[in-house]
Image (cartoon, rainbow, N blue to C red; front, side, top):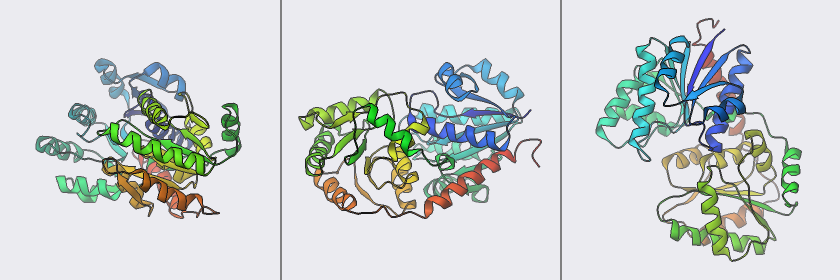
Length: 363
């Protein structure tokens, strides 16, 4: 039986990272039904129950070394693990996991990662050294490829692939309708909003509130806030709702949905307005128009890959920007199918096969 150890930002109630984990596990099991998967997690009990895997705490050093000793492949990713904007400690943690994999003589794959920004000179040197030791590196966008190349990572060993979530099957729209109806949400226009804490929150909360209120009244729309990180995103949503002045036809989705349920919900939306990367990815997967507000290069990279448009950075976004672009998308009678989605789906599937090819019994 092949054994795989997965490392990433798992077990922290982040719907985007949980979606990536779901996609990776699902893909691996389709290729190797008997595979034994162990996940390093911030909440091992939840991860084990939710994904039907073995799991241990990400800081359980002895448990990690024991699992590593018996694993065939260590996968680091997906997600934006190698960056030092939110924390240099997390960067060093993920690098140390990769390094220990190589010290133990294991096959190591960086899986569909989003790289950077990495600002510290020391961190860039360590990232270059550790990444060059990996057996295989795949990144989810061209910007990540350039970031690694600029650090001195061997470019001929880096493959540009797609976010792991693109390997998930299409959503069950009817299932999403049932979930929404149970929450009192009907079939009027539904506008999804996915925000997060960031610098300048006091200013941009007011801008989103003005835009949401305008869209709600002008289009008789229902505003559905979609927290992807709990409870932080819920707190931001509550601030916007308070600034709107009314909760009529305004909803916040609670914690607890599976990845499949999130996709089913998104498939029923008319528009997604988002800061959160995977809210935009979910929308793209379900052919739902989206407006992106950037707080991180990963947003710009994803939208560029979709031939889309970032309407503003979070420090400059204005309600009029949101309203103007939303009007154009809501007035379209049909959603234009983005042919790139099919290509990304195929590439995400190929990336699973690349991981499987590193297993000792791979053909």
